[in-house]
Length: 177
Image 1 (tube, rainbow, N blue to C red):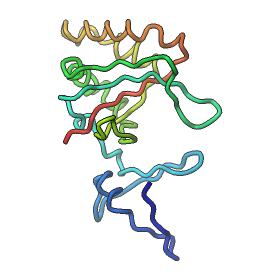
Image 2 (cartoon, helix red, strand yellow):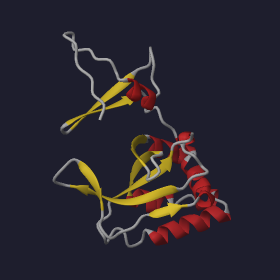
Image 3 (cartoon, rainbow, N blue to C red):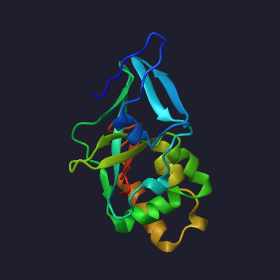
């Protein structure tokens, strides 16, 4: 954890590792989002885009559930996610980058964790119904045959998630180096 102290004027220096992570410097704006128990600091305007995701690395789809007793989401024990290899991740991300979907994917896109190799993950979250039915199930006339097959496969793999209590899907991509 990185910390800093407030001055008598209620000002603070944003520590170097945080500035580097947010990619901010003198003159850049940051935003603060108040959440239960604290606040989240971000580069104003989000600061991350789908273009920051490394398309040569896997993309993970993780089934999640809102914890109604705490302001968090959690994984569901015994339920595994879907790992998209780069050959599937590239068309998945290309579809996510279309004007219809880019805003939904980038709205909450942020670095909140690292993968098992300590590589930064860019994560966003979409409701299961939105991802499965609208993202994977819609726009068939705009998709080529390869993307259509991928989307049908993903819909089939997510079919039992709702019965298992999934209401949210985390989409994780590795930060481009």
